[in-house]
Length: 130
Image (cartoon, rainbow, N blue to C red; front, side, top):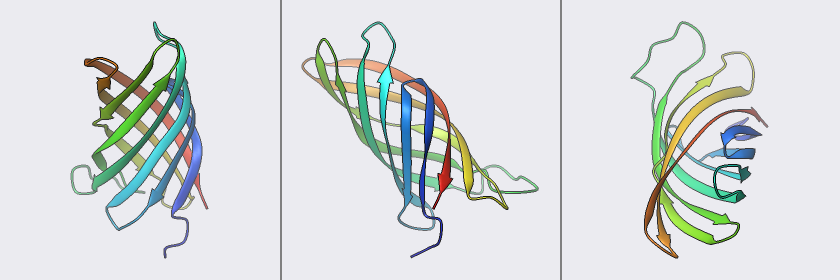
């Protein structure tokens, strides 16, 4: 087990709340959020994703900047309850000398219940790793 492989922090945007990330391999992680969505349908937003990180797309002088993508599930509880599949894509800057990352993510969601619809989430955030 690696040191500093569990991160906890904030996610801001659509949705806004608490974010976590747990590294499960050198290039793979599980992330998730418990957040509030403020869009046309204000609601509790819960998601969890399995992520793959590509560290060779961007070269930076300090730290690391992987492109990541994955698949997951989202549950949205509000006026209506929605369950869907997420396909997040983002970038994550990992600081060289601090157990901290910052990220930007787009998260297309294909809701499957109670109806089929396509939605998009977009967020920035930061996590501290323990």
